Picture 1 (cartoon, helix red, strand yellow):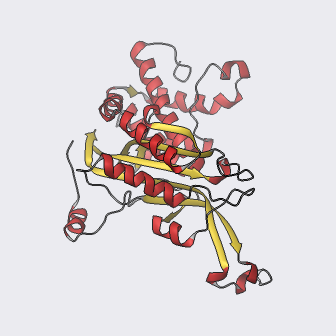
Picture 2 (cartoon, rainbow, N blue to C red):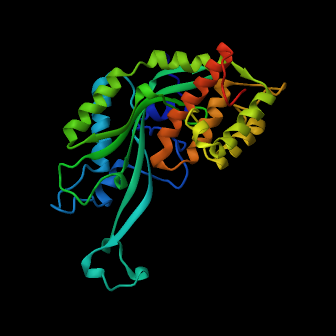
Picture 3 (cartoon, rainbow, N blue to C red):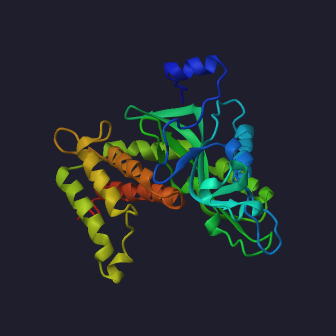
Length: 326
C-alpha cells in the first residue's frame, strides 16, 4: 500500500504541522467539530451519582486509543484525531443559579456533550479501489446515555470501537463486522485499552480490502436499482413473520431519498450512461447517506451497509433468491 498526499498536505508536513484526520466531516447530522484539547479543558466529566466517581471521560477514551494506535503502528504516519460532538448538556455553577441565561459569564457555565465520535487516520496505509484512495482508520463512539449513571463506579460503561478504511474522495467510512465492537462493556480504562488493542490486532485489512474490491465486479441495472429502493421502502410494512426472515438496510426513508438523488447526480458514484451502477458505487451511496445518521447509530448503519451490499453480491453471483432483487 502506498502513501499518497496532495500538495497542500505535503507542504504542511514539511512545515511540521500536525494534520487532522478527516479534514471533511466523516459524520454530519447534528454534530459539531471539536478536539481532544477542548474536551479535556472545557468540558465537565459526568459522575456516577451514588458515589460521585467519574466515568471514563471522552478525552481519556480518545487519548487511550491514540496511544494504542501509536504503539501498534510505530513506523506509520498517524494523524491527529478528528472529533465530532452532539447533544450538549448545559449547566451552571451554584453561584450563578439566579442569573438569567443571557447574563451568564463564561466561567459560570458548565458543559459536556452526551455523544462523541472520533476517527484516527493512518494515511501511510492506503490502497485504491476504482480510483478511490482508502486510508486505514480507527475510531470510537462514546454515548453517556447508554451508561447507568445512577449506579456506582464499577458499573459497566459502554463504548463502540471500530477499524476500517475511509474513502478519501468522500470521507465515507468502510467498516465491517470483523473490525467493530458494537457494545463494548468495560469497568475501567485498563479493560478498555485491552479490548481496543485486541480488536485492532485481530483485524484483517487485506481480507477487508478484497471484499470491498469485489464489489466493483457486480452491476445492477436501472430496473434492479429501482426495485431495490422500492423494496427497501416496503420492508417496514411487511407482515412480521416475513420481516423476521429478511435482513434489512437500516437507512431511513430520507437517506434512501438521498441515495436515489445521488444515483443520478453524484460526481463520483452515480450510474453510468446505460443506467447501471456497480456495487462499489452503490455501497458508497449508502455510506454517503449514512453520514446524516446520529452518532449512536452511525457505525451500526455503516456495518449494515456492507452486509447488505455483500448479500446483494451473493444474490447476483449465485442467482439465489434475494428478496430485494427478486
